[in-house]
Length: 146
Image (cartoon, rainbow, N blue to C red; front, side):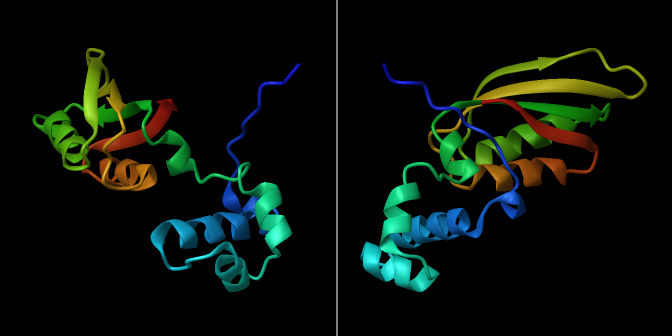
């Protein structure tokens, strides 16, 4: 009987250094900056055995979310054109918008949820969230589900 894996989202500074180095070695291999595991482990100063032990268990958050349906929740000021600007950010990142839900604004703000498919994203998920958050009029932007 196999057990279903459990996943946690943990801020990088709380992780043991070996996990961060394994993630970096995987990045070096995927970008071609290192052509072999030996080269990647040498560049990150970890053993090959540590790399092989953790390689399938360590995955950056944006890689876990790529290709999935992500639900964003935004708290927006009630301003004309603001939702349109958010949708342009998503379109520029090649997110495929599936649904948009908004409540009637109260006290000058509205909660908007946007579900988007992320298979073709051309930027990391964190960058997409940052770009939405930086739009004037966005009070809060977060990932609700994914």
